[in-house]
Image (tube, rainbow, N blue to C red; front, side, top):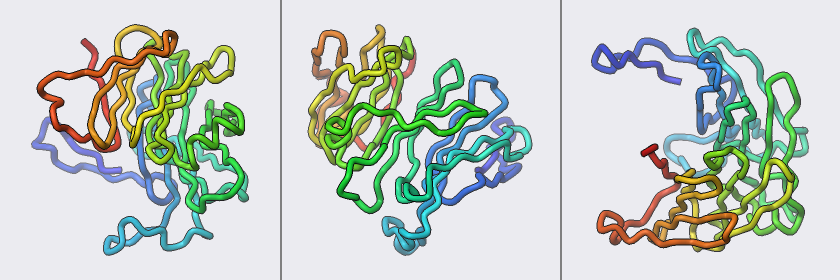
Length: 235
């Protein structure tokens, strides 16, 4: 992790080890002092950036660091037989629950646990939307987000062309949206509403409770092909 002084021309002032290999996403925890990092655990080389050079030796992890000095507070891993599930993206709730979405590097035949929740001091806990729903993700989650009330968790799969919604209170699937090459997702406006983006073009507002989508056709979006992620700034 590179640390920069924004008041001094973005001068690099420190560098922290993430406690693992291949860090992918980092967020600040609600306490304002702790960083949570998803380490993908994949060995790569600059000359072959998309190639997994050692699938058998993968070591994905979720690490917590002190933002002030980089001290490793704790690190968490799944069972050894799940080491080929790479940790990628995070959503952090105000109560300190962290949700991580994973990608299966070996495309195993059985449905893998691709959504994991965690609370500090506890073990990693797979979210179980059901085998059928997991299979719709086709071994690959792209992005993850919580709605404004933090009740609905949205996970995207560009490989499966689907967004899966999960209700934290009922612990049941709350719906799904099929959209080719979907990956970006972020909370938008009222509870249960998300903005969703596709790599082949298009931006949608999706209301989970009503199972209804509205395509946004603003001129700024015309001809746009969205990459992996999106952030919706508060109004």
